[in-house]
Image (cartoon, rainbow, N blue to C red; front, side, top):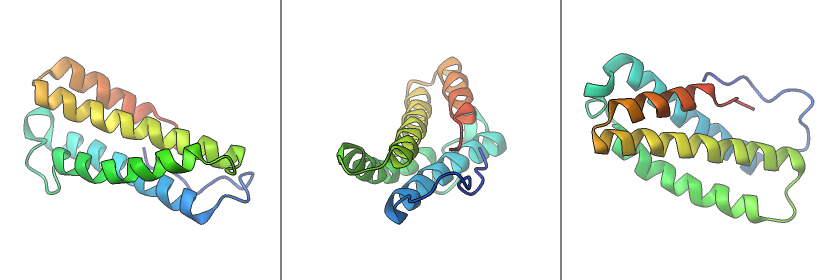
Length: 119
């Protein structure tokens, strides 16, 4: 996922929104890295493991939801927040697939996570 800095056309984005978006995408990058290094069978090995990451991103999700509902956010901020929500959903799909021990669902969720545009 390795996201670049925000494109120059995006301006006037609140630091809180940008920081939250960045943290969510970094956690998505961690999940991708762990899947590459440990695979389906070993996602429980790294620290933090996928289940710990899901707990942490749950806190981030509350912030994303609150900011998304704020009527004062700009269209650029809304786009970043919706992007973050997509990444959060993909991370949770990965965890659910592992909990169900479904390789097919895991592969689907990982593909989804890898294809989320980073902006």
